[in-house]
Image (cartoon, rainbow, N blue to C red; front, top):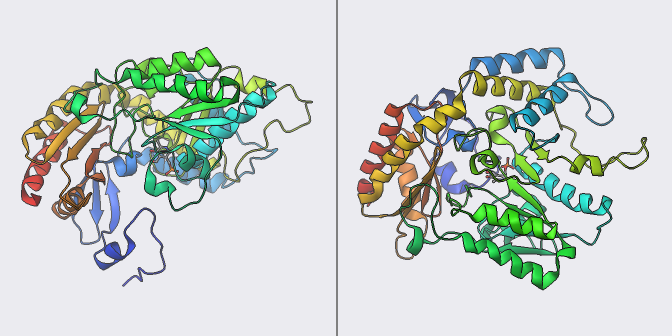
Length: 434
Ligand SMILES: Cc1ncc(COP(=O)(O)O)c(C=O)c1O
């Protein structure tokens, strides 16, 4: 019997888990297998990352081949072909909006990298006073100090001291009175982007480096941007020379039925943070994409100097690159982003059928994402959704909860029969949990 004690589990109620563990030992396509040999339907693509489904042979083989040929190559002052090939593929996926890629190992590192590039960019352009960073309430940008500083989820911040200086937050856009049970993007709320004008008035544009938002906020409970909101942020950023960063760690690689949210919404940020779906969750990797002009701004120093003093031992790791290239091939060959787009209406109708369950106070959706918000039990916030999560797991369904919100984000290979099953089980379990 494995000793569970030494492992300090991340974002987990350790004592509760260790008293009654939930162990996964295998996975294939839409399902996990537990240590007691039960099949669990994956309604969360692992953790928003296994977009092509589990244990895809092509990816497994690419990883295996790469690790036996070139297991590692130092990324500082050295290169290997896979990293250059992957950077080119990523740039091409985004129809000319971005022209360079910086590799990281996670969403958190992508966020730290993007924030640092933004501040450094202004400096190399001669605007070194632009250092402030603007995030948003309820934002999740990983767990680095930059990410939790611009992020807006209190428990992720309050234990960790004074965080970064010079950070402000836009208001979040969630409003059940105005927008409950909206299908797709809500009508109300674009004006909330105008709060950026107030921040500019307070601090002056010459002190502000960047605004970072998730185009669709995922980890905080699936908040869909109001119609026109992202466009307005773009306009205000342009007006004041502020860089706009989209954190697409969740929305990248097909989640909305397009390569990236930037394509889906038709709004072009200056930098994009990605991770997760880039390798289908198989090997840790992230990437920051930058628009034309950003990389070039750094290339004015003498040729033998390092232009950006930033990077990771595993930036562009050969095995991660092989996994990512094989993943991108699958996305393309199986047209999985189009598949997600084609399934979006079926998905929307299915999840909105949960509207009539008594504890459900909101259902929201976009692409292949849904948020189902439950009324909190008096004095026990989060308990109802967590009870539901446990029951679902016992009955063979993996969902994700945050507070009293259920977040669903299945692999893009999902079929209608799986969608029906997810909704049927949720209907049943929500009634059972009460
Ligand atoms: C929008 C967003 N940014 C950053 C992260 C952090 O990614 P990671 O856990 O890979 O560091 C996440 C993770 O869920 C995320 O959803």
